[in-house]
View (cartoon, rainbow, N blue to C red):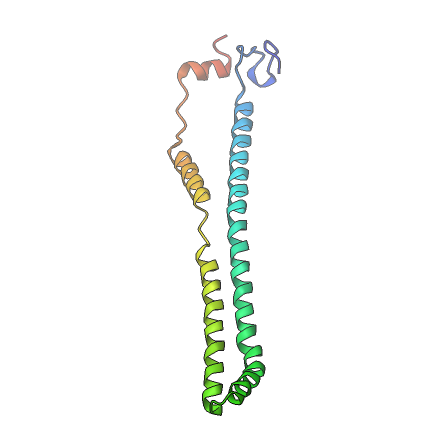
Length: 158
């Protein structure tokens, strides 16, 4: 509304230069709060997206470790044990050596997965921003209107 134009809710009184109505102030505050919440959500999504990628990477590594440990061990260990046995060791020692090698491989892949999982962090900036917003909103107290402001709003004072 241009300065000097009559506001229908103010009993025909012209607002002061730069003065905004209660509705305009409320709309501005609502828009600012909405933008703040929107930005906090966007920040949370960005931080969590990186951690989800790390979690998926760790899960894939763990899945690969499981496949290697469960599917490849029975098939390849027999072949390797018979190959070692052909070199001159007894069959029992041959199977024991092969089993130890596959267990070592599974442990290494499991440690790789664990390292990926340990890189996952909580969304620190999002938590800090939300706490600051909550603190501001907790401490925000509306001040009571002065008698002069009430009289102006009611049109008693021009």
